Length: 347
Image (cartoon, rainbow, N blue to C red; front, side):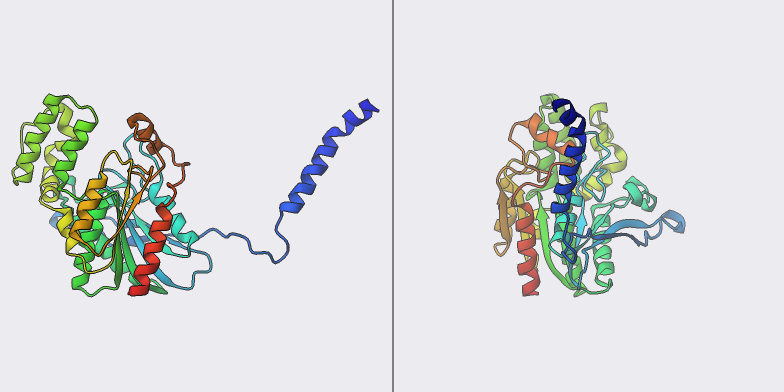
């Protein structure tokens, strides 16, 4: 009998699994989760030197299933070679943060457009040369994307969401669109600086454990750039950060005060900041909030710069940057969708 039972055991297990599957299967007519629709959207990249036509800018339009219309969110990535999903060419930076935000928005019935910055990923062909880029280039591009998305069927108003450096881009793009009376109903600043970028850059170098002599040299270069002067003598360890081709861009960026930009906004502003962020601090968020007292301030316990749950311990914190399977920290999407609902209702 035992031998007979042993022979039949695989069949009994299979039958049990089949029965379990039938119990878990949706009943006829029962609603099932349908993934949102994604499509590539392009924007004219403009003209380069000598009248040459540049390639197109590219983005992903995500429309929730059964979407009946409403707001749409334009999502802007942060600094460096960061693509539309929030991933970088820099090794160890692949968190999928912006893709996760877009998916979270779709779950709440909100459309989104996340874009590759000019010169990055699919928008590489729209690059006029990194020496031609200025901070205002990205501001103009985000404003152009916002104008395009407002022309999509059933879009009521647009919200601008920027992460890290993208937070300031979103803020300035909103101000630009206000002049055109574009239907912008809010700005979402995620992990955004409240101080001039040069100051944050030097602070980040110190926190990373860079040699004091190198930090001192970087601070000297930063001071020159902040004063509008290029620097010829850049040591090899600092070339990636301060190479001559990117210095005009850095000069344009370091001339800005993010808090001043936030203070000038006339639309609702969300300032969302993780409390274990190693790159931008809660103090930055508070500076933005002081500049714009009408803003909504959301401090997320245990969230780091890429908005994943992470400890303050530096190696463990940075390890989350490389794991796209980690979800967004609890509270991030609630703050984002709650703000959007309020901002749209006020529009």
